[in-house]
Image (cartoon, rainbow, N blue to C red; front, top):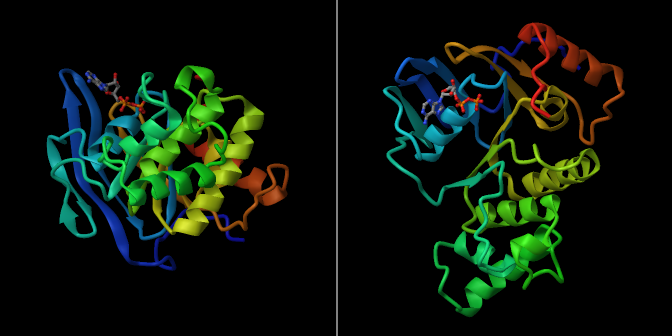
Length: 262
Ligand code: ADP
């Protein structure tokens, strides 16, 4: 295991997402300042940093939900000009439709919410199985736990089979045990689908549990400070020496604990 900052030379070099000199400001706040990095195809990349360092702004820009003031974002070599079915987004606060059932929320992800063709129904069924929600197809969000709601959010994002999964602190509101289970399930899904994942968190442990590579950001203005490769087999044991060393190194880099929002 190499505990080192990433030189990016020994990874798969097929770039899926290229972020070039991206800047975004809101009135007097420089949310992102000249941010550049790339994510390889099939890579699980976590972005960590303190609250306000621009993580959500960056993810929204990759999703095409926000337009940076400067720089460019390429997906598969093409500039992002808006949202697309090639990128699925999972939000921290679930963002489910309260008036739709589990099935209805997932179907919405197919971009054909009113369609009841056998293909759509089959795909929804497959996704319900994938995220372990059998028996809850007809439940409404208010009848579900936080972990179950986020399973629906993940299934909805996966529905159109996107090449890229963008996740904005998706497990920030669930209890620690559920989070551990969701981590394992997410890694299973990632292994099965081979998707490229960009996962935002302020929790260093979570980043080291999941990522091939961790991008560390700084606030005020939002910049990339450094990147770390995490060359550990899954499942990762949090008490293992290598794991603890990675967490300590990233924490040192940040200068102060970032997981203070819980
Ligand atoms: P993070 O996700 O790391 O907490 P954000 O991307 O949400 O950071 O925000 C980065 C900075 O930009 C923060 O200072 C935040 O207050 C500011 N910001 C984000 N969105 C807006 C907005 N719509 N209007 C004004 N300021 C914003």
